Amino acid sequence: MQAPAFLSGTYDETMALLIEARAYAATNPGMNQRQAEPLDRFRITCEAMRVTTRLAEVMAWVMFRRAAHEGEISREDALSEDCRLSCGRICGDESFTDDPALPKRLRGLLDRSRNLYIRVTRLDAMLDDAPTRSRHSM
Image 1 (cartoon, rainbow, N blue to C red):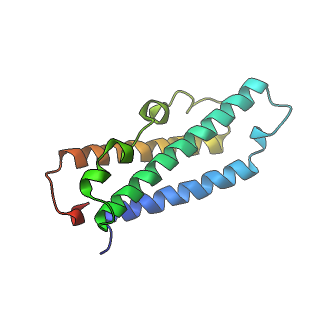
Image 2: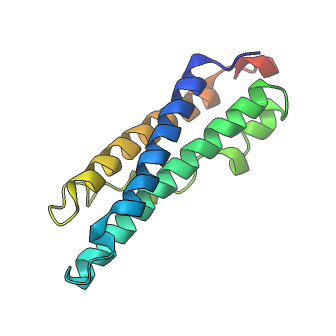
């Protein structure tokens, strides 16, 4: 059975951002420049990790929902705390999004990954509010 459109679209968007983040990490001179201030290098590294954490959280969430939809795990298991979004304080933080010391490309990844994480947080909350349905309703 095909996964609901919101799962497929979220998976595709997350995968595209993961690929973009990987390419950024592999080619970003700001993370490796010795002439950059140590504090700036540290902030760049921390914010790149924040992008990775957001995307890993969202991808895990999507995979659990897909597994529930396919009947590989129960709906109850998919809604357990172990299968929910976590790291909300870290993933929701946007304090450095507009930091001019951060490369523009990283700021874009921060913004897009945060928007995705927030949307998935809303979807996750909607699943809490949904009445119990069959395993194919996720």
